[in-house]
Picture 1 (cartoon, rainbow, N blue to C red):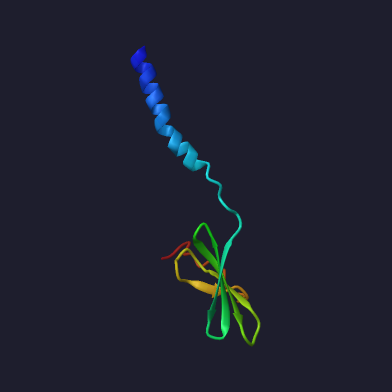
Picture 2 (spheres, helix red, strand yellow):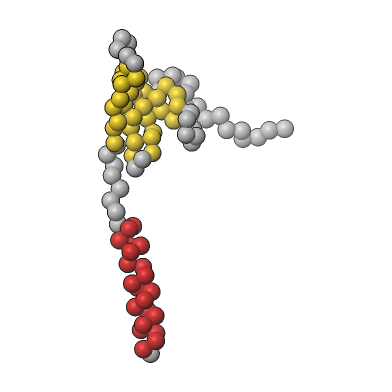
Length: 94
């Protein structure tokens, strides 16, 4: 019975670091990075390091957002474009 108790204790102690790591709070607030690019200001919005939106503020003109069009890393489209987020999945083909 002593061996079973030892194995149970070792297994429990092995899981403690995993449980502590799983309880790390996930921040719901975005991290905003502001930078200048020529005559425009760019604000990058990230959550947990994931870039999901970019706000572009030109010196002369109306600010606009760039959002992800799909899951790729570099494919951003303007959010004020009316056709921007219409899915283009292939459902059926001949």
